[in-house]
Amino acid sequence: MLTALDAQLDGLARRRIDLAPRRYGLLTACDGGLLEVSGLSVPIGAQCRIGHPGADGRAALGAEVIGFRNGNTLMMLLGDPVLLRPGARVRPEGRPGMLPVGEAFLGRAVDGEGLPIDGGEPIRAQAQWPSGGVRAGALDRSPVRQSFDTGVRALNALTTFGVGQRIGIVAGSGVGKSVLLDMVAHGAQAEIVIVGLIGERAREVSDFVERHMAGEKRGRSVVVAVPADHAPNLRIRGALLAASLAEYFRSQGRRVLLIMDSLTRVAHAAREIALLLGEPGAARGYPPSALATITKIVERAGNSAASGGSVTGLYTVLADGDNQDDPVVDTARSILDGHVVLSRDLAQRGQYPAIDIAASLSRVMTDITTPAHQTLARQFRALVASYEANRDLVMMGAYRSGADPVLDRAIMMHDALSAFLAQPAAEIVPLAPSIAALGALLGDGGAAAS
Image 1 (cartoon, one colour):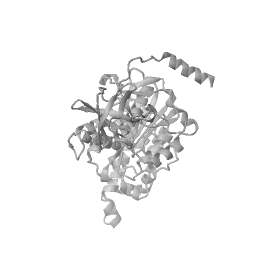
Image 2 (tube, helix red, strand yellow):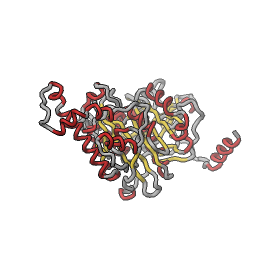
Image 3 (cartoon, helix red, strand yellow):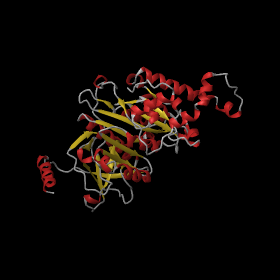
Image 4 (tube, one colour):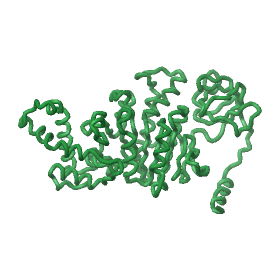
């Protein structure tokens, strides 16, 4: 108790006292969550508190600056606009563009503002990090050279990931993205696990915290949760906080796994803000700035040559209506280092995780695996693709055995191939056993794990 008090007193002693007069502006308009404030000049990204006339600052509402217009500052509320009044005082607070980070977040679940939602004590972060990240040159990022163990047999053996890689899990709603994320979060080998649950159902947030914030994993995990009913700028702020925490721990030389569910909800939030500011919709209603937000967040993951740390990014991407050509899906697929596609047809057949191996890809697999492993993975893909392409003919009995040797083998091994892809959610299969099982399945036990 005394040690914790001493640490707080030391932090207060080092803090500079601000003796400048307190500035404030006046609320002049509120339109659909967009606020206009006069008489207050603060930069974009600054947070402010809005108090009612005659009320003290403790009852104030939070808002974030998102732009300027006709001499007024444009803000978006971080909460509910109920009880807002014209003429309310708006005061800036904190450092614009900076987010709290530090060891105090380990083992905690927080919201987009960094406030605890797990019922624990307030988080006293001793460090801050730029919300937009610390931009590094392209040559300051070291290449991906080490394999990343996900604990999922199909991913380890057929789409091997690397430390510092950015991967997307692409699927429609209800196909199993969150379950696959659970499996990776449970079985992945990483020093720190940062989970950003952005725009998802509140029930999923409580379930995830209950499953993963317990036992020895708690001390190396952070959950940043902003459910779907929160303001769009708060959802984006939650994604930026998760990325900033990952960058902070990477700067200390640690190996970090950043899980973000979902990248599409971040794009939806950016779209709401851009349309509110009057930006025209371009690709199927998405303004250019909304899609650019995805790129900026994804590019923050990777390896650091300076610290030796890494951020391996795993992002879910919701394909609206199972459309693989959705603008968000297409943008994410073009900037990510690999993608895992989940198939609704496979899920309906009872295969979980419903990974469509033929459509999934890891762009760094050839750099981190042995030639023997790559050959086995190509053989597996060829067998699965051949069976799926001729599935209707086989089911109708229209295919004559002997016409295609690859298809004959695929038909014979179909049950074994499907069993290899399936895996119970609670089971963990490390990297080396996954590759060994692939070699045993295809009759080549000599394939060595990379």
